[in-house]
Length: 366
Ligand SMILES: C[S@@+](CC[C@H](N)C(=O)[O-])C[C@H]1O[C@@H](n2cnc3c(N)ncnc32)[C@H](O)[C@@H]1O
Ligand SMILES: [Zn+2]
Image (cartoon, rainbow, N blue to C red; front, side):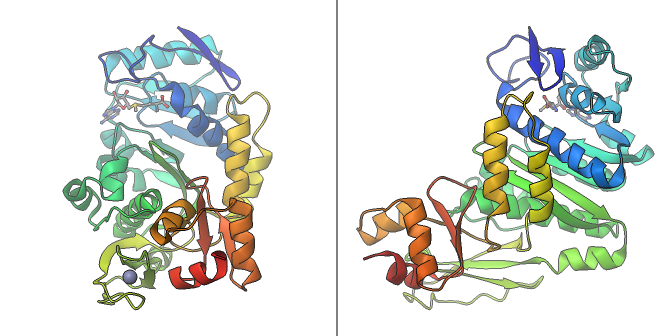
């Protein structure tokens, strides 16, 4: 089946199961992810120019083809010969140059350097992370679709894959994002590479992040300094965070006295650069099928308060036995009480604030 996406037209397998069958993988639900990839590449090119781009796990090659149509020198790799043939066909169909290699991306990344490396594998990107830090010069783009291990719903798997303790809280998508960033920061640090997340988003089925790389031990140390822990109370939703590579649990919840749980090490630093996000927003353009959602997401991200967790108003309202109010009203009430507050991209009823849970209740419940 032929589909148009952005400025390109590609042949993709006709399958309704998003790649779970035998055919070459294609997931139409990832169009937002791919539209934003193009916008990020454009914003990145404003500063660095276009360069080489590796679509490491290419499948139909749709990412590589879209990057090639933006002027990038594209390499696609895949271990599936059918994917290799399809990616070649798709580059040719769009009159784009580019190489398509029937290679294991891990071997390829240990041999070759690219300005930008894009990891968009099945499930966890962890098996590709070490090699990617030895291949990407400027920017590493990573998708993780294993949200259950990342956010603590599959606890043991999360511990094994990410070398961190995830806990399934009411801000699970954000825990997933920060567990992924923590693992990537620690992987980069092993090779004296520092990471700065310039754009990241969590949607229902995946986390996507873009890391600007600085290949110095100083930068790697600075990235490790962004790690820390969240101590969470399941009884009243109180949480506290603390920077530091080693956990220093706070014990009982200062709000209600229940024992808190330790989550981490998590990336506690910024998950995006607000100025970069604003530039990305200017590169979301009409030909993109998910233009509206991409614009809304950029807008939400740019305004998101820099706090490592968020609250869900509906969960809090239920917990307190009160009725929920409109989100703008909720944020206003927190601000009127002197707290910083913003909505967040993690969900329609989520809020970030520097108020603790008792302060939120005092400020927002009439
Ligand atoms: C989720 S799909 C890629 C989707 C694609 N990036 C897109 O946007 O539609 C993952 C692909 O990785 C390939 N793959 C798995 N292991 C690989 C490896 N070690 N090296 C290269 N490709 C691999 C699979 O054959 C599959 O085509
Ligand atoms: Zn508590």
